[in-house]
Amino acid sequence: MIDGRCSAACMLTATTSMTLDIAAIGSTPMARCDALGAHARALDGHAPFARGEAVDARRAPMRASASAATAATAPRATARRARIANAKARGTTTTTRACVNSPEGVLAALVCVGTCAGVLEKRTRVGARVSGPVLAMASASALASANALPGASAAYEAVWTTVMPSGVVLALLASGKALVGKGWTGAGEDVAKAFVVGACGTVVGTAAAFAACGRALGTHGAKIAGCLCASYIGGSLNFAATAQALDVVNAGGKALLTGAMAADNLAMCAYLAALFAIKTSGPSEEERSREVESGERVLSGVTAASACASLAMALIVLELSRLVAAGFGAPSLSLGVACVLAPIVSISASTIARTSKSESRNLSSILAFSGSQPMSEALMLLFFATLGAMVDLRTIFATLSGGAMLPFIAILLTTQLVFTLLVGHKLLKIPLWAVLVAANANVGGPATAAAMAAARGWRQAFAPAVATGIFGYSIATLIGVAIGIFLA
Image (cartoon, rainbow, N blue to C red; front, side, top):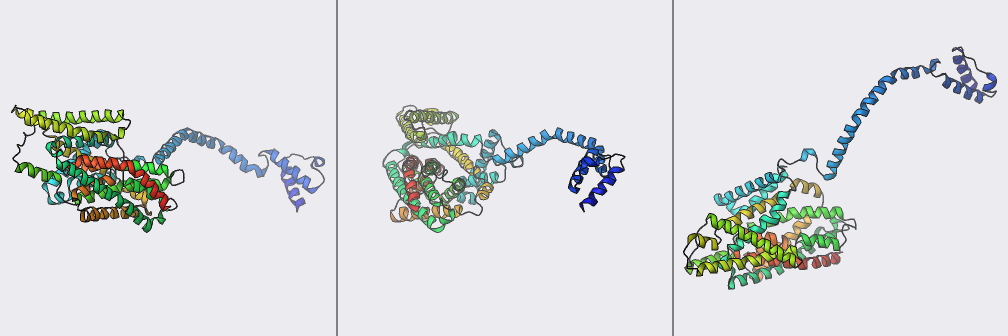
């Protein structure tokens, strides 16, 4: 068989008028085949079996041209692939760009949302029942989920760092005499007792949630439970501190930690909405009725000068608070310092107004900081709209799809709220408004607690809300770490 293939090759080679040196080929059949194969390859297109190679040679210029065109477009294609890869790495693509992206546009949209929420609260029955802050949160969250607002913006940071503290200080400046006397002291005691009850409710809720679906969270479920427990006693600051103390990230729980943080944003908004849905009278209404009965003179109305004076004093108080907190090495406590300075300023100004012999309308309104309360309410609506805008439901549900994180947090917070209401309000007879403020301080921290008190006009609750929230910061991490270790 081998000799036959070699003879056929010899015949094809002979047709090209070329000769082979048989002696050089060799005498064995395998040697002859090898020599003939080498000679056939050396013909390079002259033999009939090399026609395919000749055709390929004729097509070579076209292939070269196509290769040149591909090489010319390669850099553009590579750059496009790089852009797509970078966009995917950031978690966004060009098709997910929000309709409004500039800080000015985002702020304008948030102000419009707050305005609509305020109008609906005042003009409609449904709005009055739901409340303006809840309407603002829900509307802004819907816009963010519809890709009309971005998930992150410099406008959000400005609202958190400047607008919200200004609103709290303006509300404190408007309080005047409501901040002094036995009523304010009693309010602080009520909120403090309710806060302790709420912290115990968070521990009970964490245990109940872990017993119900903690195992579904995986091997790091106990650590995540500890982080959430700390978050719902103090705040997000304690969530991060507890995660670091329990070494959640380095232990391989980064994905679960990310899901917990996403679920926490949604849960906090839902929890705040539930608190706003509970209707009750606050201490400010009781104080106002006493003032009317005693015949106390109501100071003059809002003027341009009083509005400017109120805003200027609020910003001055914030700056002084920042300097004082930074001087003590605790810049995060600046809002707490502001809640101490603002009442001092308000009480001093109202005292001067009462003792002054001048009957000037402008002077009275300036010293009373007239206009600070409406401005505070407006800024609080803007703050709650910002809270809602930071909750993109699509992203959260995509992150948590198929997981047990949302049920876990739902059980935790439901148990915490029921426990706080039953033990605090029904058993210990703590006023309902104090229980609600303390529960907000537990879950949202001092900022959201003070914002809720300002939005509902509970002037005597401002300072206690901030004080209990800051106290929660100091104890929550230790409790969260202990719970995480115990459940593990």
